[in-house]
Image 1: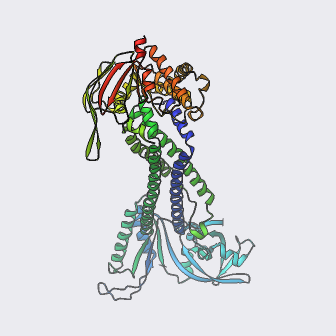
Image 2 (image 1 turned 180 degrees about the horizontal axis):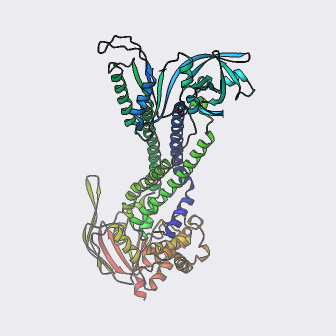
Length: 410
Length: 230
């Protein structure tokens, strides 16, 4: 239905009436610009939020124990609960299909000394999987492996900041440090997105810690990564089920949070998901408000324009223009202006977002703001329909005025 | 060509209605040059608007080219206007952002003629009204008489059955009035039916038949000396 003559009429009309064309275009471009910026900034916020939980794996779960707070089966309140290797093994076996990563944890605080430099650091005794659970990034050397555990090797992986504290600019890999009296070989240096505290830690093999300090099979915590194929709801159910199961197994009251609890990232993720959902809902509300304001703006201008052109339409009709041809002409013109202006607003918005980039991350928590192609596509659709409506309603009315009345208009 | 029987037309004014045409009977044959005379308020413009399908009537029959005009929607009216009628208005009614040539070519656009062809035809008609050299001027660069001649060229370009002129000389001085009337006479001499509305005796006298209207009824209908001369 490409009608070259129709386009010629439209371009002539736009060209001869530049001010109003630019004005109506500006309204739409501005609305779309605001819409784009709003969406981009919220997506930037969302990116920051996701980043804030980058410390641990998205699918991490932690089994923690402390003292009972409720009597149960004749056992008293205040009984200390202790996790042991067999509990770890039970979990690993019982839930093997639902688990991607698993590691025990023992928390210790040790003086680590190298030559004249010494300081107290938190040291965690773990299994090799722990690297993925904690999202530990190896900068140099390697992480703990199964062999270290089997041989109860005295090896240590230190955080970037420990390395700086003790070694400064000197190389650390292959050097020996004194950990609470024993000599450990530094095999790796790591960093962590979780912040400075996370980088002032050190990791040693679980078995080494158990044999050296206490010679028992105690563990402080079990860290797990649930199978990422599980949905959030299923992962939460898994956590709850495991919690009940372990409490039952250890003779803990089913509701005793203090004695044993499972901290599940799936719950936090669900919370973030809900929060972002609400944020997006608000933005969609405000964004659509902006768009509607733009649409009303262009509708107003179109009503004015059409009033101004009523006489012209009367002339055209006297010369044989059908109402449909007049409506078609106005609608096509309106759609053309909204589409072009909307595209300009969108491009400008995207350009500004790309200029902002990560520059606002530190102060305003806006990271890499951008709009997705779906949003762009949706906004374009809205624009075209806005142009259609804004042009159609007043044009339809104008086209149905009797030519004699239209000719009388001034 | 135009046959009107017992035509009535009222306009609502608030709660009342104003009875403008009170039973008009008029028969205009092909090739006639008719003027409708009357003071303002006599109903002459209303009559022209009804004849020109720019407005509907309440009662009576109207036949245009043998076709009964009844219950026309805007689309049908537009097609009939384009096919049978050419308009010349007192205030010219040229589209201000189109050149003289484009204004003349516009009815052909609505007829569906290709651009090249319609511009060529339009130029022929501009030449006919002596404005070929002004083809690419905008209306506001033309004098009143020139504008009216452009409008006449536009009315003729579709080769209509009837040219309807509503006070075509109302906005012109006496010299240009004569040139416009000469043009209309030429058109009529070529066989075109011309229907002029005026309140000026000098203009009416140049037509071949004068129909006088007063308060919505025809008070006289006679051929002029100009007609008798032929």
